Image (cartoon, rainbow, N blue to C red; front, side, top):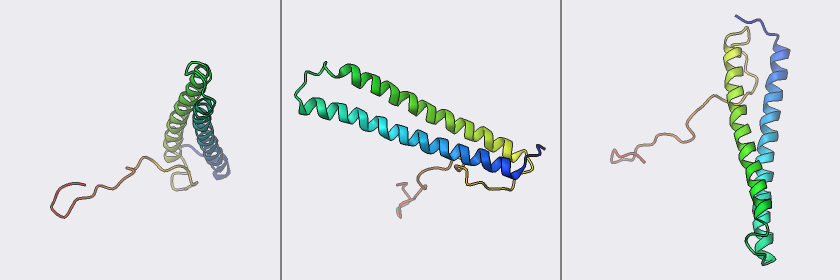
Length: 114
């Protein structure tokens, strides 16, 4: 069993949460930038190819930050494994929860699934 101080675990948990929040803000900002490039280009009646380079670069940045979000999820899972094998296994830090389905499995009254 790993012996980890609770205060140290809290620091890692807080940094993990802050990182996820920052990445989520970046995803939102880049998605908005992509939409703005398209909207301004259309409003200015620009040829489709004029803003394509900027849109492509912003879109590639968006794809990379989404991949970063995926990687952060993997890092979080690894940190949870470490916590479970440590003196902190019963301590909850408010970390992102482990995978849970986003919708409940609901059966219709006639026995069919929704």
